[in-house]
Length: 195
Image (cartoon, rainbow, N blue to C red; front, side, top):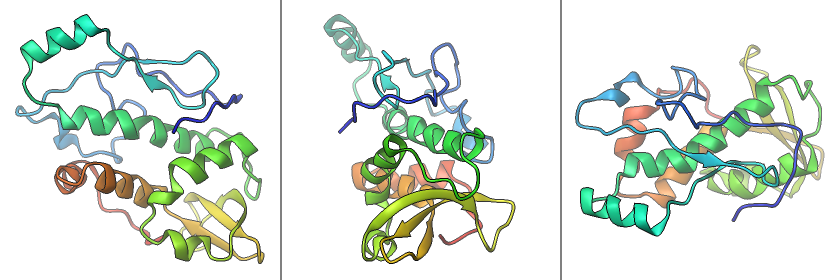
C-alpha cells in the first residue's frame, strides 16, 4: 500500500539509465546479474511529487498486448527489482544523504514508510518491535563503527538495531517464494552483520 507522503528527500530517477540497479553500489548486487541468460531492461518510473517512493510507470493496454505477443512469461528479475530498488534507494538516502545526524529521529513520513513497507518483512519482526516502537533513529552500529544503520527506540527506551537488508530479503521471500532463493543467491553478497 503506497502512502501519500511528501518529503524534501528526493530519490534519483531510474529513467534514462540502462542499469536498473544504478542506485546501488556494486557491493549491493553481484555483478553476475549480467549473465547472457538474463534480460536486463531499465525501469521507467514517475513521481508527481506527492509520494515518497517512485512508482513504476503503468504501461498502456497497447503496450501490454505488444509485450504479451513478444514475451510469453513474466520476467521475475525485473519484477523483483521494481519492488525493491526504490525501497533500497530510499533507505540508503536516509542513511547517507546527510539529512540525519546520529541520534536524530526520522521524520514522521520516513518513519511511517519504514514501519509500513520495510519492518514487517524482518524475520525477527516481533522480537525487534518488543513492547512497541516509540520512534526510529539513525546511528552508528556499536560493533561496526563505520556502518550507519537504523534503530528502533522502543517504548521502554531500549534501542535495537535492525538490518534493512534482512527486511528486503524477507520481502522477496514472501512476495516471490519460487524465485527468492535464486534471486538472493545471485544478487546479494553475504552481509557482515546479524542485525
